[in-house]
Image (tube, rainbow, N blue to C red):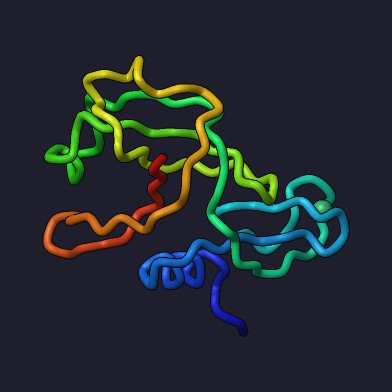
Length: 129
Ligand SMILES: [Zn+2]
């Protein structure tokens, strides 16, 4: 039994790398990783992603999950990666109190942001301009 796709994704994220799954049949890319393509049902393989993309939409989170209450407000963005996948991540480098400064379509780059979640520190998917 191979390592689960999701645990591999988070282990790579801890190491500062962004990975995804690419469908061997139709080429669709997914982030986070998944074992089967949601478009055609084909098998996927793990690929490394460059981590460059553009902001498609975003929202400001004022009322986050309990373990993130110290981080709020923060910006959550939907980023279209160059490889085609859509990925949700924290948008950093902007003032969450001035969301009007974020431009749709702005180029951003992936960063593994270390954040305290309760007792332990975990890496999360983040993007910065
Ligand atoms: Zn497919």
